[in-house]
Image (cartoon, rainbow, N blue to C red; front, side):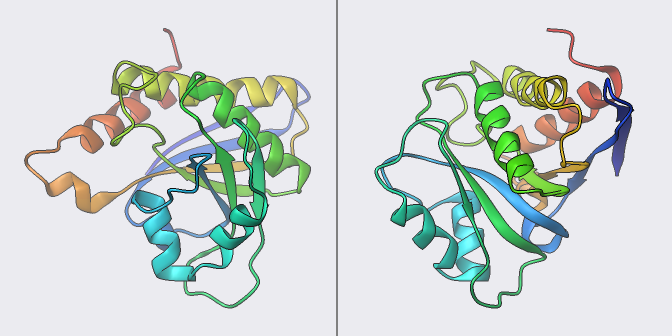
Length: 196
C-alpha cells in the first residue's frame, strides 16, 4: 500500500492511500462514485454496488432526479449489505468539466455530511477516458488536483482519510493494461506531487 500523510494549512493531518482490489472489500464510511445525469447506471462501480447492496443506493439517486452536473447525492444505508463501506456519495458527472471539479464537489458533500474516511475508484479512467481528459495521466492529475483544492478550500474538512482503489482483477487482462498504469501514475503523483 502506498500512503501519503500531510497537514492542511490549519495543521489537520490527512491521509491518502492507494490500494488494489475490490472497492466493496475495503473498509470506508462511504464510497464516492460518479454517475451520469440520465440514470444509465449499469457498469463498473454501479455494478459492484448493485451486486453487494441491491438497489437501495441507486434508488435514492433516482429519487433526486432530474440531476444536474456536479450535484451530490449522499445515499444512506437503509438495509444491511455485505460491502465494507456503509454509504455511497454519488456525484453527477455530465462529462462537461474537468475531473478536479467533480472530485471537489464530492468531497465537499462528504465534508458536509461529516464523513471521515471515504474511498473512490479511479474515476474517468475506464470507458470514459478521453471524453474530457485526453489520457490517464491527465485524469490522475485532475483527480489529485480536486483533492488538493478541497483541502485548500476546507482545511478543517471532516474528511481525514481518502483511499483510492484500483480494481485488481483488471490488472491481469493483457488487452487492458490501463489500470496498472493508472495505479503507477497515482503512486508516482502521490509520492512526488502533481506537477502538470
